[in-house]
Length: 205
Image: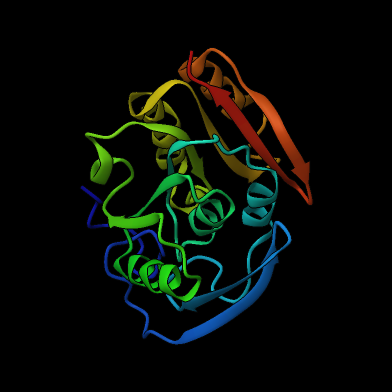
């Protein structure tokens, strides 16, 4: 369960304390137009942040199967993945109830039918499922313990040859995190780097 002593205005909480103020983002990702409803109390509420954009523009999706977006926020990564390949089934998860509500709204707004969203801490909502690809722009401000948990627990929820693709600031995605990828998977590579961010990728053997 999520610790009760987390920062009350942190976006990685079940119940955001801030008064909800809605907004809308119109953007192009992977050459397509998307519209996202956003709100206070969720990550990057005024624009698609550079890390998310880099992950979306560089992610390698399977031709078929299931994709998981861990810490989905208002749903940009998972919704774009679903739109790019209608043959996939995409599951998005987030602990923040406001983010989950927004993600559900954005599924409807962007008319994607092959994606669903579940609320819960990291992999808890999908503990009985396995995936062909796991994507994450992790909640770094929640602490490295959370980031490490996403990496270390990912293989339990992945089929053979599935990949974990995670975007982080380059100063965080240095030797320390790369060693965590090595410990969890026995391999890693840098899929993309730009604007002070890196997308790391590892494959389950």
